[in-house]
Length: 188
Figure 1: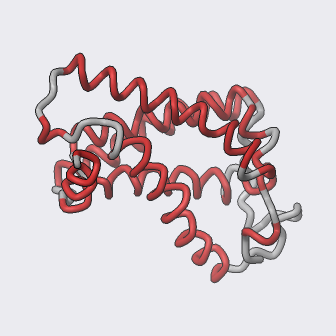
Figure 2 (figure 1 turned 60 degrees about the vertical axis):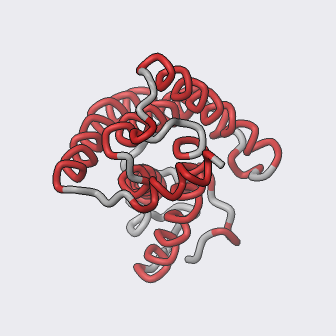
């Protein structure tokens, strides 16, 4: 089955030195776009949660590490497998650019729609954040970034690192945890 083959290829494709450069440049480009948009709109606020006096107070380094591990599996690993690896042709499939763009846009549309649906059905704490247009633009740009990195590297690991790191920074540095916090989901 093609999705199993894609998953195996993506898992077994290691990141080369060139791939690491792609990952780092992609993170830089994402930051150069997302940070000004997020700060200008008021959606992002610099509020490192280790110093925060808000709902996320007294987050210990051990709890942060535990939550990083959780974020690696969900949303990063699960969402990248579903929305990139399963839906977008792996570079070894050698599909036409037109075909690749079709599947990339299809997966991107689903990725964006998934977030508000997730808030409605599975994660009510995501409401109203997952409906916020700036959040959806930033999520869409994350999906687009990961799609291009996947096309260039063919590796699951680069896109999981990008996704996980961006979510971690949003939650723990840019006040995202105070937009989503559900006490039983996070260790304090």
